[in-house]
Image 1 (cartoon, helix red, strand yellow):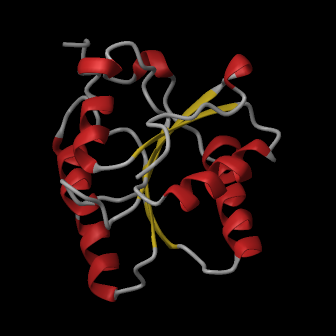
Image 2 (tube, helix red, strand yellow):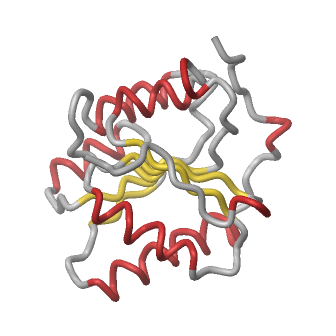
Image 3 (cartoon, rainbow, N blue to C red):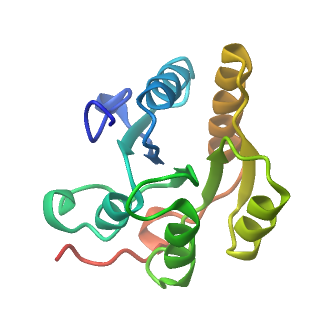
Length: 163
């Protein structure tokens, strides 16, 4: 279980919002540490399963006041609702489908990779077991999505009102 449902990184000067959907507390901590080491002001929030992620994305319940994420980092192996099911829901939802989803998981299965792209994942990255490589990859994800890629302005993105 993730120690806390959300974690903020550099929240006071947050420029980009990232939702990490990950049930492994160690991977959450590593990802938080990697984001802290970048020069890109960001706010990283973590939830531990697909059901909670969907509530976050739809701004339901305790998530009624959250900011819309600019990027979702999604593990596939999650309790209650797995990552593939969540990905399918996100990419079918007119309010959520523009949010880039990076599948970031331990599986290197060709079936998982193909299925994720068929469900419109924006990219698929297999988590390395080496700590330094893990940190490098998280930093490169952040650098690519927030310095190289042009995303639509937040005002142009659909986001349902909280309910």
